[in-house]
Amino acid sequence: MTGNKSFGTGRLVLIAAILGAIIFGCINIVSGQLFRSTRIDLTDQHLFSLSQGTRNLIGDLNEPVRFRFFMSSGLTKEAPQLAAFASRVRSMLDAYVAGSKGRISLETIDAKPYSEDEDRAVAFGISPIRSSTGDRLFFGLAATNSTDGKSVIASFSPEREAFLEYDLTRLVAELGKRGKPVVALFDGLGLSANPQMGLREAQVLTQMKQFFDVKPVEGDVEELPNNTRVVMVVHPQNLSDKTQYTLDQWAMNGGAMLIFVDPNAENQIGPRGAPPPDASSDLPKLFKAWGVGYDVKKTVADPSLALQTERNIDGRPTPMLNLPWLALRNESLRKDEAILAQLSAIVVTTAGAFDTTKEGVTLRPLMTASAEGGLLPVAETKERTADMRKLAGEIEKGKTPPVIAGRLTGTLESAFTAKPEGSTRKEEHVAKATKPANIILVGDADMVMDRNWVQRRNLLGTEVAQAFANNGDFVINAIEQMSGGVALADLRGRGVSWRPFERIQQMEAEASRRYSAKEQQLQARLKEAETKLQELGRGGQQGNEVLTPQQIETIEKFKTEVLATREELRSTQFALRSDVDRLKSSLTALNVAGVPIIAGLIALFFALRRTRREPPKPSA
Image (tube, rainbow, N blue to C red; front, side, top):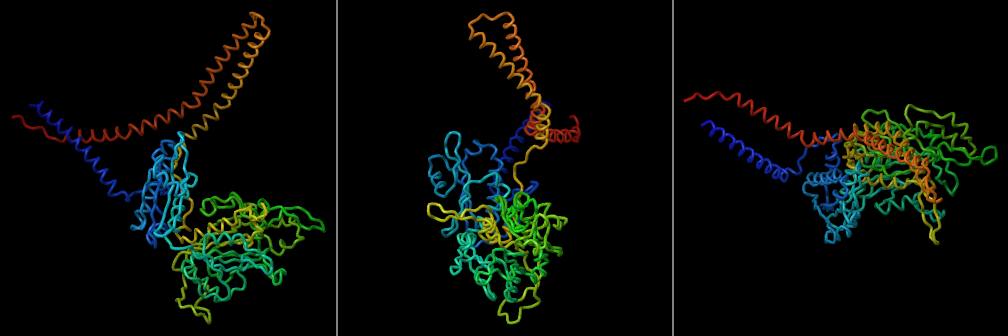
């Protein structure tokens, strides 16, 4: 009787386990389909989640966007290190589809060799990756809208993983809006061509026209061009109240604005080609109300970033560091900002500095001087005969390096209490910003002029502009980012999905420190012994002489030393890896067996607990 009960209980347990496994598998399959877009992101930097700006943008698209994700199935087999990155890319694409309210669709394509899908990938411009067998593998994205718009990420690169969301959001912003973004240009420096004075169009303006619909505006501006996405203000001087009010209200409504001011614009040309009476520019009324600090009488000077030029000292040309002429590189450029991440150098000449102390307003630095940088009076530095060597000791340093360019964010207040007299604007006056500010301030207007970043060469009879700095790239990147609205402006470099085992790296470094010197010593000793052994062998062969007992003994001695040295070298190399291998083995065992063991122990605990709770049945 007891045996039958035991058999029945055991059979029930087995059936329950089988049913549990089947139910578990079914739940995984069904939930994987029904809740594919539902996720909980527990990563440290929310690597698999979209920012609020991106969610706002994709939730309000004018155009449907179709993603074609080309991902060869053999890619992760060929390069296993890409598995985590590829998983993140796919997860992010799913997140875009889920948050777009049906405006974004996704097609995943495994472009196998010699297939029609491979031809599609090539036609879209996806860059192939050659496998070890010579086959072409693909890992890119082609996106289209309902018209003829197309944008491509030719190949997802782990080097750009920190900017994955930025690249995808930029692509969606470009395709989700019809036509080129309109840029309203206030030009106070002369970017446009002037045939009468023999001045060509600035290279930065030429490039802008390739990507944007640039609309120059001048005079009393009360209305911006239709569909304006970005306002670019270069070297503003003596703007009327009506024009300043238009700019102010644009900012109050969260409009994107790129402003270049300058304490001394060396490229400015006055009437009839003469030097201008005042080469400085400022927006004092707007800056004061917005909480921006900017002293038009001071320029940034930095001995560690200064360019060397010749100055006329005591009637002689003397080479020296021109303290206000700076080549910004490395730490001076915020590489966690997408618009600067791929840039190497930006040249500024006599740039001003910004700061802010207003509550609710933030100035995020984009370009800064180094720790050695500070401020000098413009009146002293702009003199052609000024000796910069003497001025170096007069640099006024602050607690932090001067900010040459920065992103202004927060809630701004209007510089006007009402519309200016005579204004014909129909919109109601906005006294306080209704949306976060989306403004980039740059303290040097000269940086957009050719002299600061382009030199022209004659190539086979054709004049070619060759860039020696990334000034133009910065302008294009900034407008492109800002035309996407706050969604792109807020996207900075995020983390990457690759998370190294820091403890293992520390152990490897420590082991290398302990054993590398000994390993090198043994390698040298082994090489020396082998060289002597070869010389002894060659000596006997060349002379056709019989080796003496002493030579034979010496050869045997070196052979023994070679073998001993090799054995000791193997032991050293083994010791170099043993601690690390033990830790890796432990982690592997924990990953493979740890979770099942813990689950089994929990199940056993509840089973024993249930058995103890069951009262004994009375015997018949």
